[in-house]
Image (cartoon, rainbow, N blue to C red; front, side):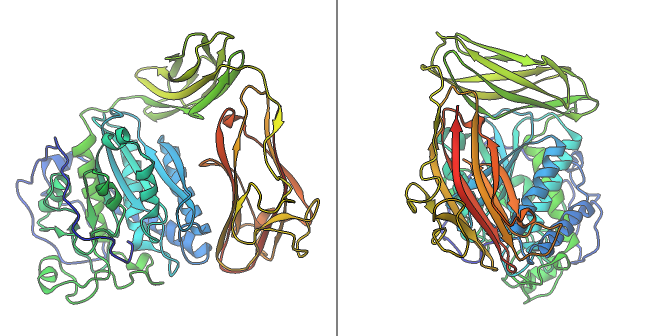
Length: 585
């Protein structure tokens, strides 16, 4: 949770149309304990329909985050190697479970880095229930209660949802935010990226920040609101008598959702504020002591978490998720469909391709037939192969005739098996054919200094300490031997209709790191928000090495090419770049 209050006087928001079944018979609160707690017998009937989230599994995620911090300078601060490794851990788990996962690069963040967004197949796209937690921590420590607890709680709930694969009445979207600790920047960037229609699709946003405080309380954001009702109903069923999250108002990622008019709520267990005597009497724990005595400190490790508080939060999330978005029945066999990339441009007389991927999300693999609809007049769509076994992929080719209708269209790709699943691709058809072969990078050798490029101070240099490959100038990122992030970027317009698109650049990577297995310092190459490649101290070389990447996915688009160098707290790595080109031919 961010340390400074952003705003007071936040208006309450209401989630219309929610039905909640309250507990028939609450049970008494139990004292604070760090032992694993079994699911309470006296939960409501609706709660019993929701899955029991294993607190041991949640704790296993916490152990992984703690290990990631230990291996990456002791923290998981946004923009650091620890944050990148945390994101990779979550993303890999979600992709394996069948989620549609995307990264959103927050260019305006204090430490530019990625949000992670995951959607589960099923449910109407205009009826979204969203669950979020910040993935970053502070630089002082590993950030386990703040906020690996929220991140792990959502991750395990997402994995259980995938394993059970119930019928969905609403679309469920999970988010892990970057740069929360520097001012809620990742979630603000996401909310600002949504148009009015997209914001209207989100019927409720639920935030989970510090849900395992060792001397914790049971707090709910906007506890009396309709949006909070399912969260409150579950804790009420345990006899916990939750209170308003006064300490957390305006200090976490629900803030900008609420400012955008989206109904919000969430769980919290408390930060640096002190537990009152009355709270200790009903919840257990120590009166007049901080809810989290290791808040924003190095001691915020796995030892700084109450398994009881964590378990109750994790099960409460499952209860709310099932209340809000799950219908009856589970398909015996099911699959998902995804298209990558999700946007393509094609000129009249030319063709373009995309990859259609499928995954088995429940039961056994099955045969899936592929088809497309929504293509404009004069554009044909074919698949190779035309049917796959779920888990397989196919190449979709879109061919535009010389008289194809121009404009932007939504093409729906449908997979048909025992059920029907679909994904969409945005296709733009231009009126000009042929390829305007060209090299589109300006000042690729940096001989004109910072002309065309946007770079961190001192990155473009003619310093003799690191020689250029050609000429006198080059881009030199990092090399300080201390925690630092530097960027180099340029907006480029990639022509349409060409057969090949190759991004080329030369790198010389010098490092003082001695490891042969751990990437402490990294150079990330992005087009737009997509990561094309990552290099590290493990790619060290005594001379320049040419790197080539296929960027055909960006034909017909104007996008920003970005090089981001991140360095941890010790042992320098210098990423030197020269002679950058993007050749379309």
